[in-house]
Image: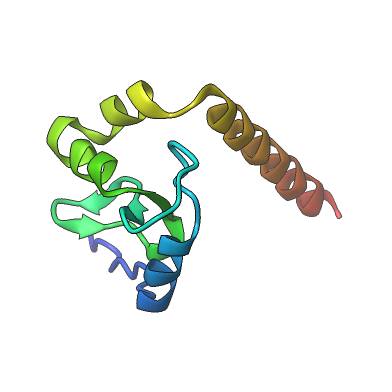
Length: 101
């Protein structure tokens, strides 16, 4: 069985642009904000840059040190989580509607 080749999006300009957005964890802006990839596609393979979010370097490192899920559970604000789940639900609904014409 062949394993399909992964082709994650790589966009250096987007990763740099994420530095200008507020952190999704704290809402803070500034020089410590970086693009953070959520999850991986395997050992040493980052997810697509299109799935990165702005967050402070401290939390990025914490995600690597403690584990991404642990870091997110401990530091994502309730309002951010709620908004993210609402957007996810809206996207699911749109996809479902599109499938039905």
